[in-house]
Amino acid sequence: MRSMSTLARVAGAALSLSATAALPTALHAQADTRPVVVVFEFNNNSIGKDRADYDGVQKGVQDLLITDLAGNSQYRLVDRSHLNQVLQEQNLSKGGAIDPQTAVRIGKILGAQYAVTGGFMSDGKGGAVMTCYTIDMETTQDQNPQKIYGKTDDVLGLIGKLSTAINGQMKFSAKAPGRMGDASGVTHQSNAKAAPATSAAAVQSGAPATEGKVELYARPLPKGMPKVSLDMATAKLYTKGLDAMDDKDNSKAIAFFKQVHEKAKDFTPATQKLEELGVKVAD
Image (tube, rainbow, N blue to C red; front, side, top):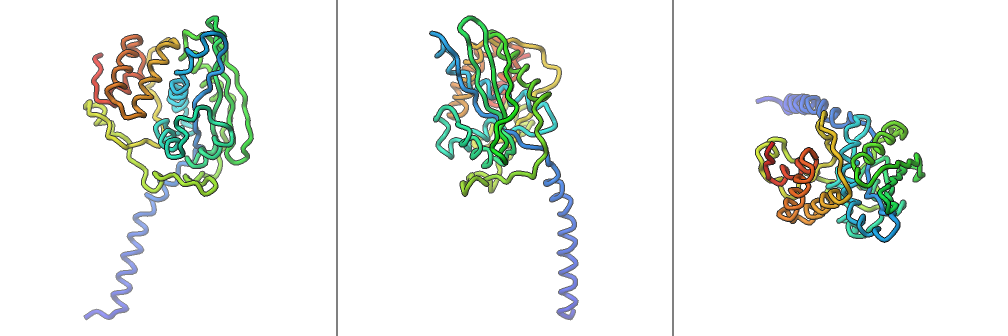
């Protein structure tokens, strides 16, 4: 019979080999030190008698800016569905505008180092302005104010200009990684076990997205997409689809996204949302 000391040495060697084998995986998980950026809904600052017509596009502007910015590999964008989950947990999903103090608190819960927030304004005559600034989660300072001019019949053009300004002029410096849930003792219930992303195979097969699964980071849109114009009315339909998805009303979401697709067949985000909901879009 082997002595206890021999068994202990064998067990110790096995544990050492196991720890060594796990080390590359642990290092790989910690290797991504790119800054994490969260984009909040943009406020409607429009003026004139038609102001209320633009109350329904805040979420659409936010979603489209996130997916546009996600094409920059220098940082990671918090996925809108993940942000929405945290807002719901904090009873803020229906609360309207997010003030800077709340933005910092939510950003820290998400493990973000920076936030982007702002607003858009229609002048009632076809002109539009988008403004934004960043918030540093560490210093809580507002930085990098931007102002972009355009037309209300080209929401994507406005968002594209704003995204270019953010990528070209706003500098998101690397910082120590934020830890999810670190916001004055406030914890995020989903941090302990992050849900896996919807698989590409599920999307390709037309299978509906699995309920309850939330992606942490936004994925960039495919490269080489055709240039599309999107007016405010269509952007509002897209936002209604997002609202329905957030409310788990998939049939209503599908109806809205189909309307968007009919108006703008080359608008990839609507096509992707339909495929996530199990609807195969004909080429």
